[in-house]
Length: 186
Image 1 (tube, rainbow, N blue to C red):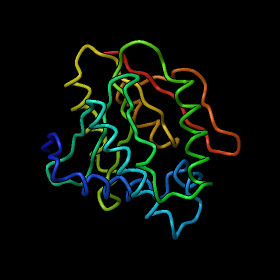
Image 2 (cartoon, helix red, strand yellow):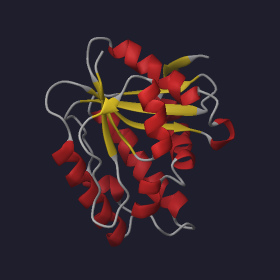
Image 3 (tube, rainbow, N blue to C red):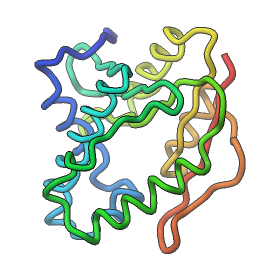
C-alpha cells in the first residue's frame, strides 16, 4: 500500500474522507447532533482543521488511492483561525469550544506528534488501512513520541495494537462521550 504526503490540490478530498469517516463517530454525533446537518457541519469543521494543521507546520498523509488520511501536528501547535468555523451554529461552536478547552487541558507537555484525525472511507474500513497509515507516520516521526485521543472503543483497540498506551483516564465534556488520551513512545 502506498502512503504519501497529501498534495495541496487534494485537500478537498482529505476533508471529504474525514467527513465520511467521522459521520457516526461518538464525538462527532455529540458535537453535531442533527444527522441531516452533520455532513455539512463536519465539512466546515474538517476544512478548518486541515487548514490549521498545515498552518501549524503539520503533515497530512494519505493512501495512494485517497481512501484514508491522517493529520499530524507538532505538540502544542494547533493553529485554527476562529473564523474558519463560520457556518457552524452557536450550539455547535459552544460544544466545540468546551471540547477544545478540555483537550488542551489534558494534552501532555513536552515534545510529541499529535495524530489529530485518522479517517478511512467507510467502504474500506476494517481492512488494516488505518493501522498502515498510522505506522507510516510513526516510522517517519522516528524518535519523537506520539499522542492522540481515541474517540471510540474500536479506535482505542487499533491504537493499542500499534503500541499506544492509555495516558491517564478517559475524559469527557459534560454530557459528551468519553475520549481516551493515548501515548506511544518511539
